[in-house]
Structures are given as C-alpha cells and as structure tokens.
Length: 141
Image 1 (spheres, one colour):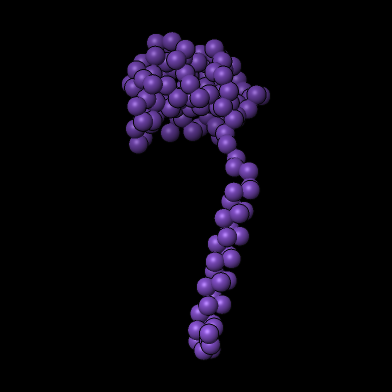
Image 2 (cartoon, rainbow, N blue to C red; image 1 turned 60 degrees about the vertical axis):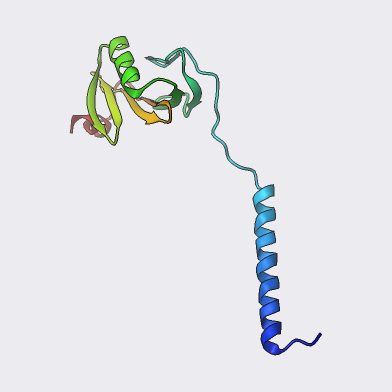
C-alpha cells in the first residue's frame, strides 16, 4: 500500500492523537483520586450540637477556627428551626440563593443551611471566642 504525502500526514496525525488519548487515559486510571474524608458524625462540634440524623460528616479542622459539614435528610427549614430552638443565641442573619446563615451573639459560630437533593447540607464554622474584627464584620453588614 502506497501512502501519498497527504495520507501519510493524516495517518501520522491520527496515530499521535490516539497515543495521546491512550496516555491520558492511562494517567487517569493510575493517578489517585482525592476524596473528602468522611467520618462518623460526632454528638457535637465544639459548642455546636450535631443533629442525631446527620450523615456524611466531614470535619476540616480540629483546632479553632474549625469547620464541619454534614448532610441530613430533612428540609432546610426544619434544620433552621432545629438550630434556632436548640441554640437560643443563634439568630437569622440572612438568606442568599436558598442558603440560610445563622450566627450566634458572640459571632464566633456560624451555621449555614442549604438545600441538598432530598435534604439539607449544614456547614458549621467555629471561630475562637475573640474573633478578629474583620471576621466579625462579615455578619454585621
């Protein structure tokens, strides 16, 4: 079979592309995939109670400032009501894109509740008691 220069260039290009795809595919299958660390949900996270039906807890820090997120199969409204009843020093600071922000009076606890499929995601941030002015200002705007 005789290749014309044009066919040779085309075949060479196709072979280079095919080997490129195979190399990319082999890298994708051998490279480790980073997954978030999911742990058993604790009863509380610093000063914040974790709902007993919480699932898929992901703590991000063990020292302050610290954060944890979890999923729960209840509506965001039910979880907001749960935290407002459980922690009287929390108050509603705002809602944006269906995410509700709750902040305590010391402004060192922030709870964000957002819709997630058939339930809600709860994000908890706990700051040192004497939060810096720049962090405290976030909730006063």
